[in-house]
Length: 109
Image (tube, rainbow, N blue to C red; front, side):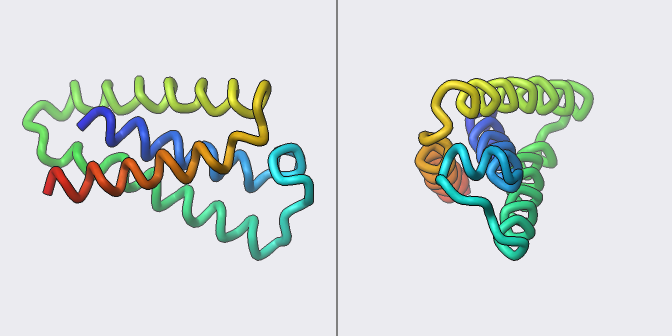
C-alpha cells in the first residue's frame, strides 16, 4: 500500500504546484483563474486525505506515520524535480498517477 500512498501524495503535490500561478504558466502556458486555483487546492486536499486512507488498517501506527512522512518527502522531491526540469509533464504525470492510485485503491478493496 506504500505505492498507493506515494501516488496519492504525488498527485496532491502536483495539484498544489499547478495551483500556483508561476508553475501553472510554466506547465500549461496560461495563468489559472481563481476558480481553477481553488479547485486544484481542493483536489489536492482530497488526494492528501486519500494518501492516509491505508494507514487506518495498520496495527503499528507509529511506523505507519513515519512511512507516510517519508513518502510525502519522496513525492514532494519528485514534484519539485518535475516542476524544475519538465514542467510540461506535470499534468500528464498527475493524471497517470491519479488513475493508477484509483486502480490500486479499487483492487485492494
